[in-house]
Structure formats: structure tokens, C-alpha cells
Length: 338
Ligand code: NAD
Ligand code: UD1
Image 1 (cartoon, rainbow, N blue to C red):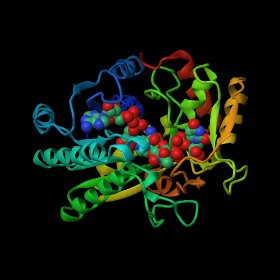
Image 2: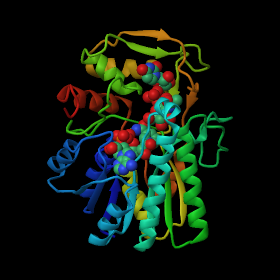
Image 3: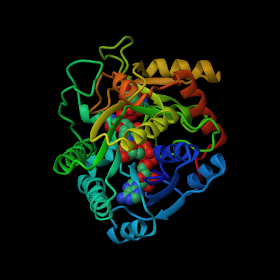
Image 4: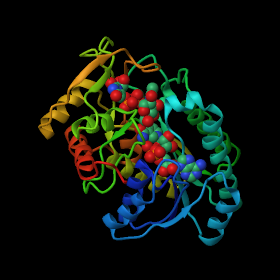
């Protein structure tokens, strides 16, 4: 297995997966419509790895474009990271989210099947679990309601992939449920590049640190957690990316349909992250307590032992590394890729 189609290659996670794939000796055929990214990340991946991605600026809903790509390359597997991911935006634009994420995946799957490429790793999310009854979350945990179109789209795609594999067991499909990826490649050349005001915690903190925002809004301090602020299972994006290489190894031995949590297996509160960031950077992060954000849950963390047992993968980097690398990226690129 040598040639991997990587959708969403220019994005935050896709660019880090591309680095790991190239470093592991794979050829990367990348596709991205650049709707939430730009091709500078692809150039940065080349600078890091001294290798090139074959890049197509195309939409995964464009069947003709996919057909062209599959005609030009013998693709062994697809790592499918392309998708729209902003929860609040998905509530405002459900049709756009369902169209992009679900129709995009359907089109991709149909073209893959046509060309006999039946190996896929899908970027799923912890969001599919919803507000579960008990923590830590294992892959067996019963899913609860997931209240927004973004999460629903991930759930529906998981179902489509399960049905597909059920109907034809020559498909090998791995659903990777990411917990909270943060941090950046240690070079500081690629990282998270939010458009406008960041929705997520770490890019907001780094923008406060660089002076773009006056203070952090801490959404809620009355949750049933050790300090009252929300608890999440943060994972370094480089560790997350390495998980995809291990998943490819499983695909090579015809794994069928598998589901793995990719997480560090530890819960940290918002204030834990602020403290760690302040400790490793020496920069004070002023914050104000604000009402809880709509749709947020108190705590979410996983049991990641299945990935260790079956894939031989575990997160190596801790919360301090995540803060150091997120800050290194922000510092070197105050305006992201602009
Ligand atoms: P991102 O927005 O940085 O990357 C997604 C990439 O997909 C972008 O470059 C975008 O331009 C591209 N894209 C979107 N729709 C496309 C289409 N129709 N055709 C071609 N390209 C398209 O997001 P990310 O953080 O890198 O997330 C990657 C995947 O992981 C997404 O599917 C996301 O839902 C999932 N995920 C992310 C997180 C997270 O916290 N970042 C957590 C869980 C799951
Ligand atoms: C969110 C999404 C999730 C998505 C993930 C990655 C929601 C409800 N969930 O996860 O579906 O997969 O992003 O895109 O939006 N926080 C603050 N101040 C901030 C930002 C966040 O206090 O400015 C808090 C949040 O309340 C939460 C924690 O920090 O307790 C982490 O938030 P965030 O980084 O947005 O991730 P999730 O909400 O876990």
C-alpha cells in the first residue's frame, strides 16, 4: 500500500496527517476545495518533509474531478478528513452542512467503489457520543442525542459506512473518533488557522496571548467538575496524526469495520489549560467567567485503551507540549497562513 488519497489535506488535521504519511514513506494525493484553508499549508508540509504532495484543488462533491483523480492514480486507501466542522454554523446552515459532509462522502464512496478502492479511514468525532451516562467513554458507550447538524452529519456518515461494510465485507473501514485535537507540528510551520473569532479553546487562548483578544471567555464555572469549568480530553494533533498511520496498518490486514477513540485518555478543565499555558509560556492569560455555551457538556473524556491494544497507538505528548507547540505556531504565524 503506497498511494493514499487524503481529503481535506490543507486543513488543520489533514496537513498534520500529510506530514506523518510522507514521513512514513507514503505517496500523498491530496484534495481540498480550500473552503476553510489555503494552499500555504501544503507548501509548509513540503518544507517540513522535503517531499511533495500531489494536490488537487477540488470539491469532493465533484464526481468528475474525483473520477479524474482515480483515473490518474492507483489509490490504495482514502483518509477522509474533508468536512465542515463548526457546530454553531451548522445550526444556522444545516442544508449546507448535510450537503457538504454527507453528499461529499457519498460521492467519494461511489467513485472509490467504481475504482475498486475499498479502504477508508474516516475523521469522526467524540461529538457522536453526545452527553453520555458515564465516563470515561469507550467505543461501546451508548450514543446519546447529538443536538446539532454537524454532529448528526458525523453520526449519519458513520451509519452509512457501517451499512456499506455490512453489505460488502471487502471494504475495510476505520472510524476514528477524535476527542479534542490541539497543538501544532513542532516546527511551527503548520497549525490551526481559524477564520475570524476562534470557536475553540486553544486558538482563543493563543490569540489572547499574542494580544489579538483582551481576555478569554470561560464558558461556565459551575459544572460538576473539579474546578467548575468544562473538562475535555485534549490530544496533541501530531499524536492524532500518527494514529492514522497505525490505522492504515490495520487496514492492510483486512480489518473490516473498526471504531477507535483517539484521545489522550485524560480530562483537563478550561482552567487547567490556562494554567499549563501560563506555566510553559510565562504569559498571563486574563479571563472572565461567562455563562455556559449553548450545547456544551460538563465533561468528556475517553478510554483510549482499545487503540493501544489493537493498533499499538497511544498519545505520547502531554498537555504542556500541546501548549508549547500551539504557542510556537501562533508566535511564528501571528496571522496564521496570511
Ligand atoms: P479544517 O476545516 O481545518 O479541515 C477540513 C478541510 O476540508 C479544510 O481544508 C476544507 O477546506 C476542506 N473541505 C471541506 N469541505 C470540502 C469539500 N466538500 N471538498 C473538499 N475539501 C473540503 O478541519 P480539521 O480540524 O482539520 O478537521 C478535519 C476533520 O476532522 C473534519 O472532518 C472534522 O469534522 C473532523 N474533526 C475535527 C475535530 C477538531 O477539533 N478539529 C474534532 C473531531 C473531528
Ligand atoms: C467543539 C465542538 C465539537 C467539535 C470540536 C472541534 C461544541 C459544543 N462542540 O468541542 O463538536 O468536534 O469543538 O471543532 O461546540 N471554552 C471556553 N472558552 C472559549 C472556548 C471554549 O471556555 O473561548 C470551553 C468550552 O466551554 C469547553 C472547552 O473550553 O468546556 C473546550 O471547548 P472547544 O475547544 O470549543 O471544544 P468542544 O466544545 O469540546
